[in-house]
Image (cartoon, rainbow, N blue to C red; front, side, top):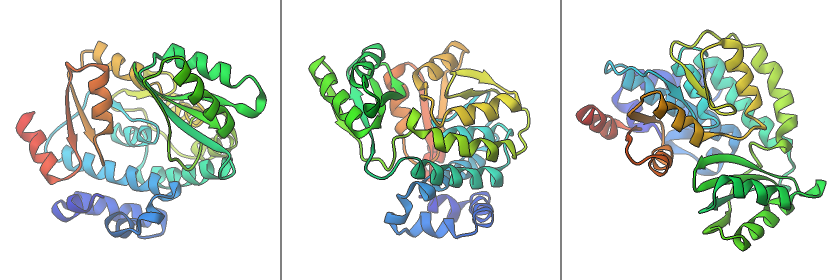
Length: 294
């Protein structure tokens, strides 16, 4: 992950070197060579994805490309803040690693779960969650409002399993448990949010050079205080991705560029609005394609 970028572009290599210095271990070695078991631990996954995303962004920026808006899904909101000039890269790298540790520690292993509900409108998923969490031991809440037909739910194992069964009964096309290390973006993450808040408070934020669409509110933000507050609240708050993309489309955006590993966000955008042009940059080949098509 990110190896081809680092081999081809000095600015990408420099990004990994900065991450190594900030984190105190060889993130580049972990990204390029594994072991995969370690890379899958969220305290390593989060800084790895974050660093690869910023490396890809910096490579793209060297071509003269500039964005009018920035957005990131969950962890990606940190990348969006760095891209917008609101947050220092090294400080963000340290924070996302700590974020991963705190999220992992918030709920004992095996007690939390997440599931994807497909082919069911968000309002119906909300109703399913409400019905499934009628007792306190079965907390389950919408976590990622990804598309009009895809909502990820999160909470206690009993609540999520009950919601999956209810969703199937009520007509969802699919309702599947996800392989995750913790129940992200739900109220069970409150201990992680409480611990992360003073860490973010200690970091200097600058006014964003271009608006950032924040996850929890699906609004355009440039204020340092509001950007920091949004990163705190998103730990327990739902990622309102559909609304975020619809907001950008309403603002007149017609070309979206996903930077970093994978094409998940491009796939979500196609489900939200197929008319939009969506490109990806994660390696030299995809960068070349973007430069050719844009």
